Length: 269
Image (cartoon, rainbow, N blue to C red):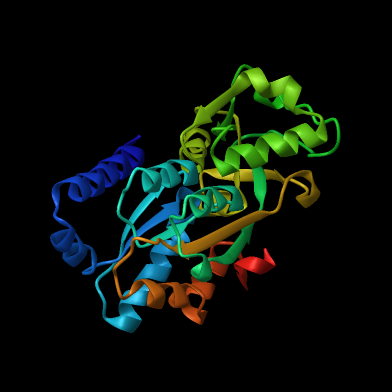
């Protein structure tokens, strides 16, 4: 997919810069503009939050690599240079924290989200997400689009919810697993999959799909988005941008896309 290829090229370029540059030259180049690793589901809201940062601060626009939180965490492990990591779940932030890759005092649980079952906008499907749910009739001969259910947060939440409702075993062999949640959304919006599980915010951003139902909140772990400054960051604007994400302009951008803003310290998560 085009967006995924662009993301991979960007991350590869960052890694190449890390390998090729001397320490002083790299530090100088990294300090000029912010580099943010962010979950794919944040794209619309974070793009707007970045735009408000540019308007208010006069600083250059940050460079953002959007991908699955799992992929970005692994890039950080491999030494990819970034200033902030914005994850779609607590586990992958815990993963990099456990490897001493973030500054723990900067970590904030900023946003909450929901997951939803979606279909193409013109689909006549009707599904109730109640115990014993069976998606096979609505799937017909098609497949259920989801982000990778073993690694990507949206996929793991979706699998957990279907397991809790007793519907996973009926569809586990009919899942089309995508690299990230936006790729799963694309499969449904193009009509290549009759059903999909994505974040509610993703569904709201795509007019070519409609929400059949939102999963009960108690059917999966809470969907929390933490953000933190990466330990290796030398950019003096990293802390300021994190403060901006906790401010009124960014709050408006996140809420406009359907996120719930938590804005609480990490130890309250």
